[in-house]
Image 1: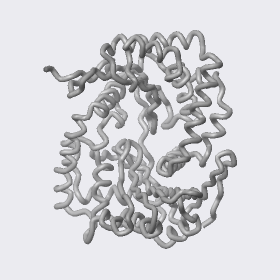
Image 2: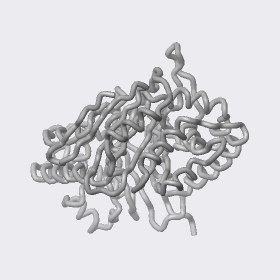
Image 3: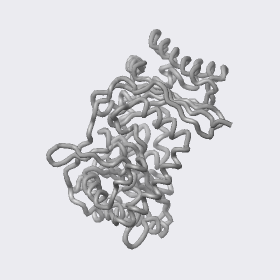
Image 4: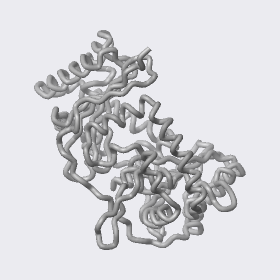
Length: 424
């Protein structure tokens, strides 16, 4: 394998990258002075992948929640649960499914190569039967019901349902009770063979490791052949929100709100520059150092959990504002007034520079955490960027680019999600 180095002298960090003959991307970031390591084996297959591209280019539907279901089942083998293997090395192992990817991971301070071997092995050896799939349907059904009682998840999922008509980001990552009932062992094997091919995957390892040892271990552990990667289906959603207001009642002590502005995008992904410009803009206009934030806090319209952030991925991009509030409608009006005011007057130079420095600092700190670094390297790769790409982008960012992102907040694509306390 040809190894390429990406260095950032300011951060004093280096990422070693290579492409295995199978198509697997490998990125290793050794960290001197660290005692542990974190590894992530990720596949570009998440809950938004509700269609599978066929050989003729057409798309056939996949039951919602299948990516998450497959993640659960991969930890099982005919002989042994994968978690038992990691107990031998003293490593902590886990997995997660997001809207856009599924990742299998471990963290440990010793026997790293042995743990890496276990990780690569169990992900490459699926084992499904009709009986185990049926059992898992009951387990995941309970998980779905559990998340429907989680205010933080429900308020966001409700908002996405209010914003999007067709994009599968509006569907629960775990699917629904009805959708998972259509999953069987044959379907899981078919989807595994389609999505879980090395050309659609990446391995990142960060921490106390020797890059040469990692690359050598991968060379002897990857057994799958390079295959054509199915394309994701992209559907342009309407610029208008489906509904302006949605609410649910749950066991909360105070009303919760989440305001969202859907960005109308005509291609699957916004650029990394637009993503970073959005972060800086939101910090400059709504951050904790702004007079607006302080006034809202003094007026009791928001609480300390208030946040403003960009939620974006393949086919979706939403500016979100949320937190606790006794009067969500009044709070939302204040936020909208602030947006219109800054659209008219622009972002002040001082606020922009302060926000830019803060976001730059967040990126610097990101590389101090081995798990965060590994996740971020995955994210950069799956969106087409090399390591440290964000550092040059934020350095060259202008206030005009930040203001251009503010202009994306349009009323036609706006919706409000509210969680109200249960009736006493």
